[in-house]
Image 1 (tube, rainbow, N blue to C red):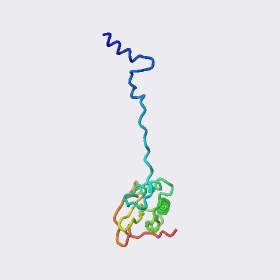
Image 2 (image 1 turned 180 degrees about the vertical axis):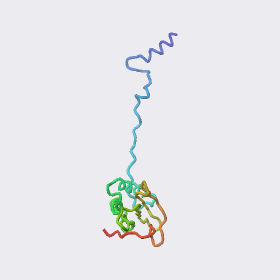
Image 3 (image 1 turned 60 degrees about the vertical axis):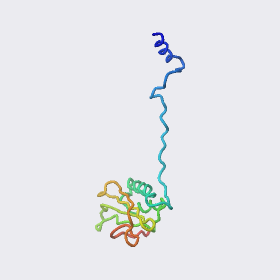
Image 4 (image 1 turned 180 degrees about the horizontal axis):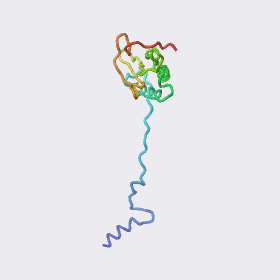
Length: 147
């Protein structure tokens, strides 16, 4: 009994010696924030998909979300080559906002970074897909990127 009392009293020392810290008092390990995606000009299309997706998501949350030019301009600012881009019209033939806007960047000789946004899409969609004939990424009519 004396041994049990002695062990119990050790935890009552003024400096707390012998008392394990409570889980609430322990310091959590530091969290490391993920670094933002960066442009990798020598990387693959897959290497650049995180940046392409991040830029697409950022424009989607802006007031310019229904402007194809906003996606092209933001991707250009991020480092993608405007000369290798395509974008569909952001207005219908009667002037209404398009239900879907598609934009792309041809990457090297065989791949494309492709984005699609709009009310019919819901959240932005981005992907890496093979290039089509003649180095194109999008099927159908696209608008000139002449700005």
